[in-house]
Length: 460
Figure 1 (cartoon, rainbow, N blue to C red):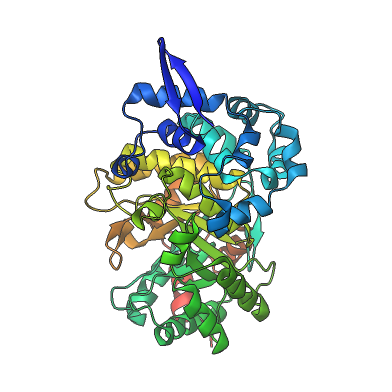
Figure 2: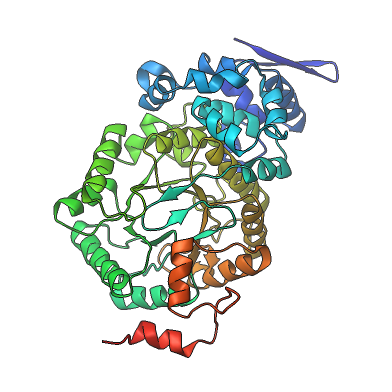
């Protein structure tokens, strides 16, 4: 089906929904690299005019990747909840945008609708939104998950403590870990990206994290961000696996490039659930995504990178994850060129993930060859906090010495807590109080030698 729009007397034609979506996307280097972007700002606006008039129901028929050849498409189609979709089935994309920003579209209404939305519908409506719209709509949505603590509660901001080390030296990791804990970071997860991705090394790291967690009775969860097959093998060998991690994408071909399938992810989830290690819940999966992943694998099927990204959220949704985050600026300027594109993509990913029903977080980051700096990251972390992001990632000094990219620091998390009044998960906050790391007003004690002594040399 051809889609049309007339702008200033000129008729613009778009061959299918995939092309309308791509041309309507905000400017970004990845879409230009792929040759799917609008030729100029006028065509971009024309595509948005056309997209606004597309019925939401059209996305159930005009599929960007064929059902017969892609298991992600089959997942999207086969799990679509027609009853949940019914309240908005009569709407166009433009009408859906207006509804999302209206008072009747409250948290309960959006949560009930979420199973009825396909990723293409969600990507489409985001393309008609300004940044403030993405923030205002996402702020309404809360997605609660639980393992050893509860993430996603109102007024809370989770943090991932990322104590990476270029050689996986346990002493170096321990130093970064202690630094983060003393600054009140780590309730969402203590997650290590291993420098050496093998099973034996992963077990060493997991055992070290487990020893720290149990010694100090920290109500958090750990994760070694290794390939899902390694996690399954570590579980089989009796390793203390809390969360199973995997990078995912929005097409079968891209996931094949990651070495995963839907069946493998289901196997991993079952293996983690069999350990029954959670205390307040059993959400055991941790997924990471990022715009440009499918394009970098030449597995985007002509889609713009943001639409392909939201299809990854359909994969995540199928496995009831504890955490999902976009590593928004990690892939590089070939996909998100500068700070403006990174900020926009971060707000899009957060909004779209939340609308899909995911506990969405973000690694607010950039590579050293991107046209971005830490001021851009300051802006994005604050905008995401206002938007109600579930969690953010933090590394010592904002500089990951193993992955060689720039992220947020532990101290940035303190800035967000003091500026916006957000707090850690309640179970983790109680632990901080018990360790005397918080004062009577709930603020971090930056000079608390008694707390430091209790962590470094506890009684007994």
